[in-house]
Amino acid sequence: MRDGYFTMWHGEEYACAPGEGEVRLYSADPRIGFTAAAPGRFVKVVPAWEVDQLKYVVTRCVWRDEPFLIIGEHDGWLRVEYTGGSALTAEALGLEYFDRGVYQAWAPVTEVGQVREEVYG
Image (cartoon, rainbow, N blue to C red):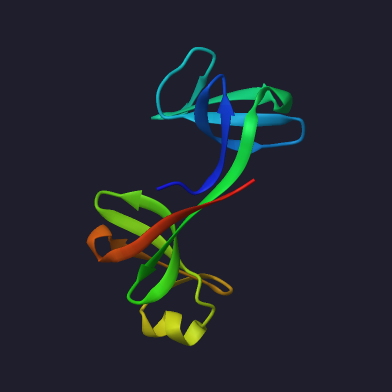
């Protein structure tokens, strides 16, 4: 599941973090010119003019008949964030309070439906 910024660089797509005049490219695999940032995470900073098609991707879904964003995944579970806007509903669903107006949970991938990506940019 994709969530965040992505771009094309030298014909390949990378997760990225745009900055002022530069873009940080991320790879799960070691690549020439990339530096190890953490286990399984490699980074390369390139000038912004070198990248193409900078876009922001969110993955939406439905869980327990309510709308969510998928913000992560691990071992058959999806980290979901409630987008329905009702604190009462979020609390009734037993979601974790993350921040003001933000409720999240781990949902079994088998219980999540209507998964779709939205691409902006």
